[in-house]
Length: 306
Figure 1 (spheres, rainbow, N blue to C red):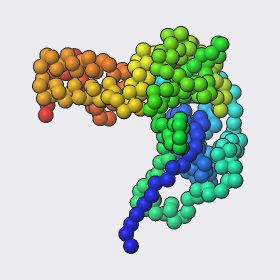
Figure 2 (cartoon, rainbow, N blue to C red):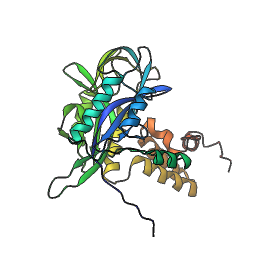
Figure 3 (cartoon, rainbow, N blue to C red):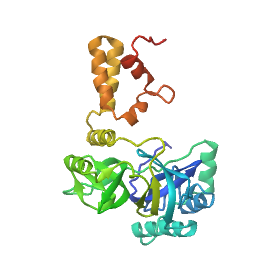
């Protein structure tokens, strides 16, 4: 007998959740129709209940603690009106599964044999979601996407929402439902200051599906909306399969290493500064970050040891 495997498409939705791993991290937690939950690892409903009991997933953040919102920063919680406790949040997640799978049939359940198998192999499975929307026209296929968190201001109310950009270069804000946006329309929302990256001082923020929170701006400095716009523009290129500023910068870097001239350094500078400032650390590895780019561009007299 020969070994084989198959891949299966499992649909789901994302809901806001909080991971407590030393700090508190807001995530888009995927809940699938087979009862699988993605909370930085793959859990079935029984395992997810244990994740709640042991405090890995929590429905709230204590006052005076910080909540990390990926791509925006750390925000101090000054006051809060949270919607769930541990028990009611589990019920909420279970109801989401029931909405996707009304009969609650064919639910995934990890067996003891599987747990022992993967523990022995030192494997931890992920169920990371791929954002998508149904492609218009004949058939049932999807357009993949990617996204980031943004703050959205409407009629004086500030909400934390997720922005998803799809391969057809359309975008969706969770807070506005199924309304579709173009890249230019998002630019207009930014210019009108309806899309932003930080509260104005201490400000109540709606985290839909979790509660209302009085947040203070990050103590580490506010993320520039211009740099965030660069990130959004880069996402439009990425999901459409086009060259991103990150890729163009890496190409310019390799070109400079091959031919270290003033011309190639200037091309590298232009490419480097096109990368959003808060993403430049990802141009290198975890240790070097973008240090070699900084050396080449701003301290060329310093030679790198090879």
